Structures are given as C-alpha cells and as structure tokens.
Amino acid sequence: QLLQAEGAKEVLLWNSSYLPNLYPYGKDHFMWRRCLADPESPDHQLLPRFQVSDGFRAVIHRGDLIYWPDRWAHYIRTIKGPSVSFGYRDQVHTVLSNESVPRDLIEKVEKTRYAKGSGPNGFLRTGNGRSLVSRLDLQMDDDDA
Image 1: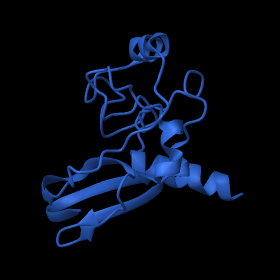
Image 2 (image 1 turned 135 degrees about the vertical axis):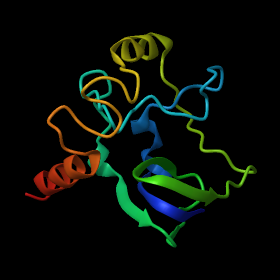
Image 3 (image 1 turned 30 degrees about the horizontal axis):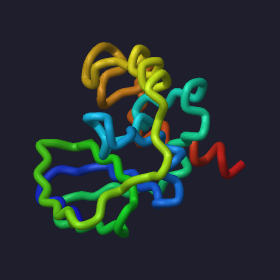
C-alpha cells in the first residue's frame, strides 16, 4: 500500500483487533478517521491501554513496498529525507471501531499535547536525544525480558 521512492520511513502497524486500545475518535468528531493515541508521545496515565510496542514496526527505504491488511491502523513518519512515497488507500473500507473516545478524555489529552516538530522533544527526537526508532527498540527489548 506504500511504495517508497526516495528517503526512508518508519511504519508502525496495529491489527484491527487492537483498535480500541488506540482510542479512536468518534464519527461525530472532525478527526473521526484518526486515533487519540500518539506513538511519538504516549500518555500512559490518560491512555493506559495504548502501548507502542504492541504494534508491528518496519523501516522502508528507496524501492521498498509495504502492504498491510485492510482495517489495520498505521502510523508513518519520515526518518531520512527528502522522502517521496506513493500510496494507495481502498476507500471502500474504513478503519472504524464500535468504541469512541469520550469528549472529556479528548480534551484532557489534547491539553497535554505539544505541536509536532516544536521544542526540544520535536518530531524526530525524544527528550533524551534518541529517535523514536531507538526508543521503540529499547521498549521492545524491555518487553522481551
């Protein structure tokens, strides 16, 4: 579903049964096709069911093609740019959950959010200077122990 033509991207995938743990916005919200959980800034207090390491991770480079099954949630970010990719989305099916996030939880989480790309924790680096890829590797290693 995504062909990487130049640069590199990190792709995180969660199967459709995991969707409630991503805290999907309801159909009445303008971000209804999105989820409240943010892999770049997990909030274990407000969103305790979400674990970045519960997903599958792939890194794609120039010439790579990645496919994920219908109704799987995905999170994609550039890790080496400039990045050019071509994607295909089947509009017939939409990733939906019967569960949606209560409005008060949305407000609580959004009050804690930073603007992506801003400040020392920005889009590409975590607070300790490691990339999200490094942090995921550490989390996955900790889970295996």
